[in-house]
Length: 115
Image 1 (cartoon, rainbow, N blue to C red):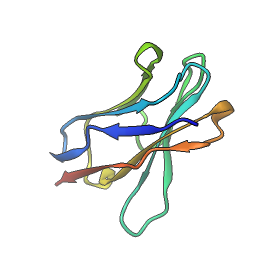
Image 2 (cartoon, helix red, strand yellow):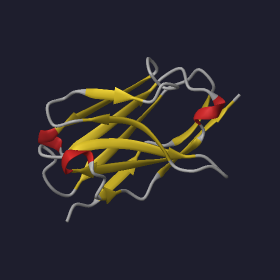
Image 3 (cartoon, rainbow, N blue to C red):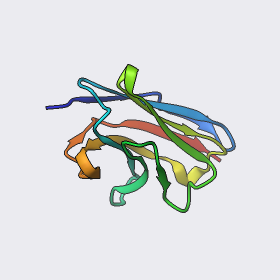
């Protein structure tokens, strides 16, 4: 069982940046790590993922603005968010799983971008 704890959310003006962190209770080297978000009144959507060999993938609307990374020695995944837009406002969730099957989820951290 892996527990994930996100941090780093907050309020920021449009155009600003935030870095989200996700600390895992266990080793992350064998897990695909991902970030999802859910805006008020909308379904949860995938944002980005990084696989076990470091390949990264992004949802189209965040490509070029968000960067996902992970530090296996710190059991931590990061989501660096830049050029934030009002529509990025959401609760952001970290997820992990073997083969990018999202078996484990964090509790979420809220991001509010004011225009």
